[in-house]
Each structure stands twice: as structure tokens, then as C-alpha cells.
Image (tube, rainbow, N blue to C red; front, side, top):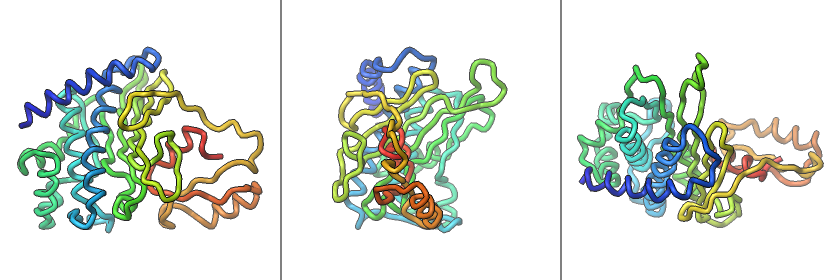
Length: 279
């Protein structure tokens, strides 16, 4: 089954590689293509699970934050795809199968394995892949905004590649992909709509582009060109633990913003800002 899945992934990479020629030439074209395909694959799983939340297994981590079947399954498929293409790369990822099993959350692991279509043993090995001595690293949050996911609201899969760039001694992000399954196809947020979803992708030296999830219609993103601060839009997190709503309110009054703040979970906020939806 794993071999069959990897053949499908390679076919998907070939298809998306053609569409990503929209991007200017850059040094990380293979990595960007792979990252976009992996995030899209994760979205297929997370979207299906979010539509059936009543039957989604979840657990609580040591830091009191939630983890779901979708978090673990998405991490599995993303790492599996990237690890097979870039076997020397390391991974920094949110979830740990070993920790979940140690806390007695085997049902969550078994359900995640079923969602990712792998065995429990395969899932544990993939999810906990790290390779600490690697020269470059993929950094993954399989579901950023798990609380939003559990409410049936906004969340995203956030993935980046950290590398030493052109002889610099410090590592930095050179590829970034956000998969936002519940934003509108134009990257906007409309109340009461699930949205068709978008993928936002960027690579160093190539700019930032967006496409609807199910299509390959990449368009360049630019930040807002609003003439006045009063026309700006303030975007902040839903949870008070993640955003200082009082400070945001004071800033809005000082800037005399005409619009009410927009609150949503996850780094989907950054997708809105990158597309000029914010102030």
C-alpha cells in the first residue's frame, strides 16, 4: 500500500510541477512542488475528518492543548511524502506518536493510522521521524488552530523548509506553504461559509502565490495598498490566550479603524494579510 501511495504522490508532483512554473526561477523548485503536494494531501484527510467531528478521536497533551486524529494523520502523510523525496532532511513537527502511546491514547493512534491508510507501526515510525543531525529541516504544524478545527472553523497546515542560504551561517526559512481548507477560493473570509480552500506558497527569491485548493491557478499576492490607516482591517486570534484583544481594541481606536476586527484561528490570518486583506 505504501508503494502504491508513493506512486500516486509522484504522479501528483509531476502534475503540480507543471503548474508551479508560474513562479520565477528559484533554487528550491523541487522542494516547493513537493511541499505543496504534501500539504494538499494532508488537506484531503483533515477536510474529511472535520466534516465528521462527532467521530473524531482527540486527546489532551501535557501542555493542555488538544491533539486529534487529524493532527497525527496529517503529520504522517506530510513527513512520509517529504522523507521519501529528501531522505537526508530532518523534521521538527508538532506531534509525537510515542508520547500519545505513553499516555494511553492508542485509539487516537489507530484512528490516525486508518485515516492515513498505513499500519500503526508505520504511522509511529513516520510521525516520529526527526533526523537531528540533518543540515536542513522541514518545520511542520499539521493542524495549526486545532481548537478552530474542533469548532468546524478555520485552521491550516503550516510547513516550511529551513536551510543555510548561499553560504550564510544562520539558517532561515527558504520555502513556506500554508494550506487553508476553509478560506474562500480567492483567499478571503466570509462569515457562514466553509470556503473552497486555498494554498499559499512562497520561496526565497520567487515571491508569494496563491491558488484554490482543487486547482492550479496560481496568482501572485501583494500586501494592501490602502491609502489610509482608517481603511485598514485588524486581524487577530479568536482565543484571548493567543491575542491581546484589549491592546487590539486600543490600537483600533487610535488608528480610527472603520471596520470591526476580524478574528480567526491559526496562521490562516497570515494568508489574509499576504493577500492584502488586512491593514
